Image 1 (cartoon, helix red, strand yellow):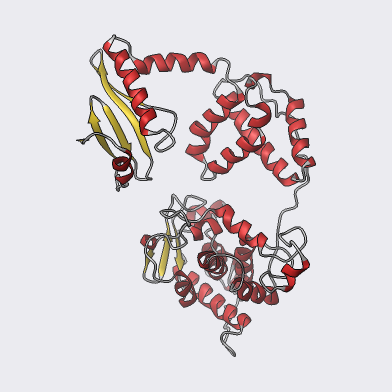
Image 2 (cartoon, rainbow, N blue to C red):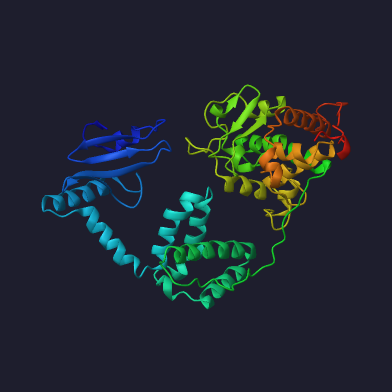
Length: 421
């Protein structure tokens, strides 16, 4: 922990994340802790009854907890220490008393902080959904007062506004939150028991035809979106990887012809190697840092922005068409609606059609093996993944007409009896 000069906003903003977390202190125990993720948290370090204490100041991080707010909290805590009061212990007692009768706002905050952030990569989506659909109606109510009827009425309201699938998703998030409260003995019962999804959900299995693949690929060139967005969508199709993993691509993950998706970015938490064909490398380009960087800089694009960009560029009623002129202008793609994930499914389906086994296609997609094969089969399939992605590249070039007469050599499936044990 290094001693520094008087904190200013300019100084705090200049602190860059490192491989390991580090501290900067102003003096008298007032510190900021910088994590590898870039998060900056305020702390008051003090000693009471022979014990060194690390008290976090505020319920968030900089800049949400401003320098002025942090300094005010620090000053108040320091006065208490001078008068023999342990501010952390006082804070703990206050939190315990508050937990005895938490409001829904309290419960959402605790669920996000202690469960969603620790266990879900999509925790921000949970937070957004709960803040949008739950807190406006229930925020100041005691969590213990929420009944099954309240849950049903809330879901019906979401359906009536024209968002039936969102109603299903909200129920899942509410159910997880109340189950968390029961498990932690915050509540005795969950009001979600016996509540069914308000809408029957049809799971998507959309695979683009050859003509649709060409329409999408060439349509992206004139679509109303950034160049990063166009290349990201094309790379999803070229590699068959998950949209969220593609848009988070950083040059440090690339080594020669291979892209390694680290465990903390892979959806299933397993490191995944992706072979980069010539087309894939062309789409990635030679930019340093995040390949598909957010306009705000310093981080990748938001996954929701990718799906939204697709919807607004489809000339189809209900998916972004404003007027007939939009459809005829050539800037929108006139076709059945599709999503970024459909591009991944399309790539997988084409690799299967080229004769690659399910095991190889699953290896390309980073699907988790199940059953006995998960225990005994530790083969990385690098050679097979390369063959599958190169064959898919040739097939894709043939579809796009960019390689007239390109030879597509399918890998024929072996009969079960011919496959090695």
